[in-house]
Image (cartoon, helix red, strand yellow):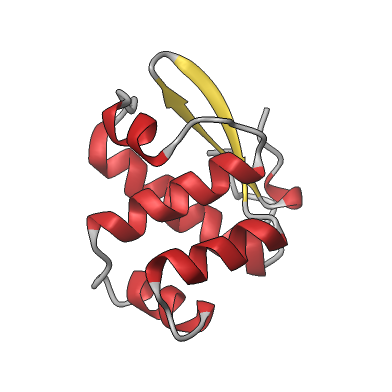
Length: 110
């Protein structure tokens, strides 16, 4: 089960539940991949609703790697994500938020 207090989120890829976590290494990789000036800029993209599909995929990939998944970006791009693009964006946003905040008691384990 994903532990939101540890910054984790969950996503079902190809029928398999995966735990995602943005480790420090995953965050550094994410900044480089997205060529973001800072993680604050990336957070602002999500908060403002101006994120792109590549932002979602990069966040998910970084989180999956931080959670121990060994797939590639092309594996993720081909994967069937339960809940589709909406769930992918929801999990990516939750993952980013959990990396920098303490969850509320009502925060569910996405």
